[in-house]
Image 1 (cartoon, helix red, strand yellow):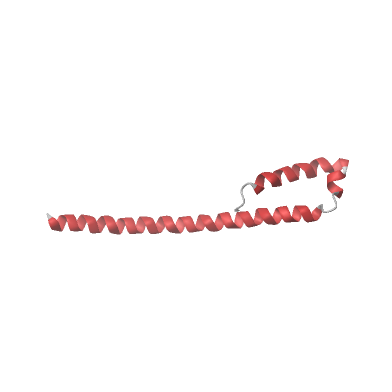
Image 2: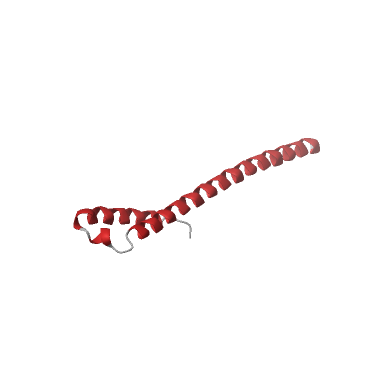
Amino acid sequence: MEILLIILLTLSITISFFVIRNLILKNEKLEDFISKQSEAINACGKRLKEIDNKNIFYADDEIGWFFKEVKKIQEALNEFTLK
């Protein structure tokens, strides 16, 4: 009876080890992905500010509406960055 219990415990510990290791690896990949996405969003926001640093596009009637929409999209994306 003791031998069976030892075998079952050893088996469950071994399986748990591989499951936890697999989950940790997946978690690390997702953290890297989120970090890269956050960097890309921040770079886009910075570039958008550089493009219109004098508010030329924002004040133009013909392209101003488009630029306002792009800024709204950027603001929505900024919510998904790492802080």
